[in-house]
Image 1 (spheres, rainbow, N blue to C red):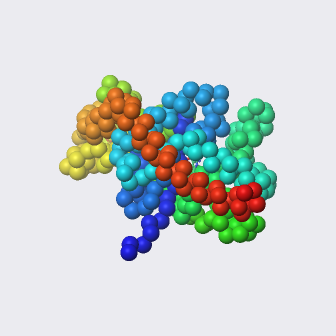
Image 2: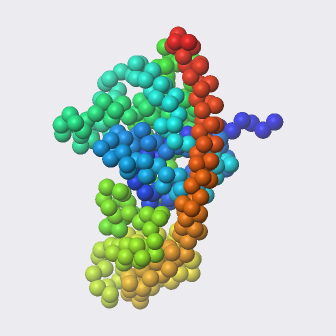
Image 3: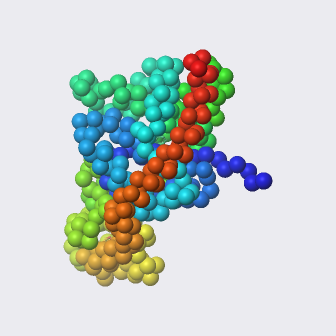
Length: 330
Ligand code: TRP
Ligand code: SF4
């Protein structure tokens, strides 16, 4: 008999549309994982509310968009279980119970909280929910008896906290949960239009759903090699903000040509951008096609979510029976 697949759990906050940074970082990683592991991927809409509680409409809209984007890049509901966090109320119950055993200092020294703008910025921003963010994340993970958690480095302290909280639960109430391990997602080399990290908050992202006109304007506005001020100046693809997109979308011959011509000023950035734009449009075409397919078939999307919800519920209900028994609440 084949060994039981290890279980993978990860979530994505639903605070806006997905961009190429998500695609070439998180999602390409999920695509690999779904082939080899028992994967649970969810839209973390409760976590989104920790920062967007004044804009719940954005959270709602993004949740649907994010699902469409996942499916459009090839996340496969036949391989991975896909669901929405807030539809599985068991996460909230486990979060409550974990909050009883999580010492406050553990949360106060969490870098996300400690270094955040909200501390000292007025009580209205520094909410109870924001402080407890990693406790909810711990519940999200261990409620599935997860073994592995794919995350970016920024999330490492949260998974560390998950491990500590889980150990404490097991110590207090008897071995109940496996201790999950993080798998670090390789950082995407794709940066934003302005050369900073591609991020919603910098307003410098190329979205998976950008149409041709938008792609054209965004590529045109992209910062390239800042040392290359004039057309006749030699450039350096290694220092160019746009170049990392070429290996993801352009042909090997085109890339070789750019690498040899750019340092000799034989190609200008305008032409290089034209090549990229053409390839970007072609590369994203199948994604766009699937996006409009799902936009036009809302029932199909609802069915996929309902199916994932059912699978997630089957597991979380069982876990909560064990948890309630362990804490003598049954
Ligand atoms: N905090 C994660 C992020 O901002 C999202 C998240 C919520 C998550 N719950 C999770 C990730 C559980 C992994 C596992 O990216
Ligand atoms: Fe970058 Fe291309 Fe301009 Fe060279 S020619 S600096 S690789 S955009």
